[in-house]
Length: 138
Image (cartoon, rainbow, N blue to C red; front, side, top):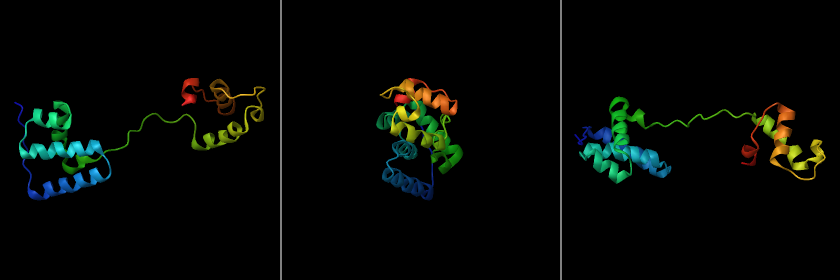
């Protein structure tokens, strides 16, 4: 069955609309779509309609509604993904600024130009941390 409907009293709907305005003001597209999904479900629209209107998969629509049913407004909280921990600390990165600004000769190299391999060697020599030359370029 493609129908999805949840019933809410007026206060939670008002809270959703308030959060929707905040999401628009903060340019949080993902949250805007999530709140619209719930509001459309309250209106009684089908999963297919909601998915088509918002450019989401039908499973995503079901997931958003299910999360709201189980967690309420708490389902609208996003945490920044943790990602991979940096190999160098902020202090170590700052310590690299001087040698990189002054050039290879000041860092003890007999080369006139900078390269990813040279910076890779500098990081490895100073901090014992190995980076890919391709990553260093970025």
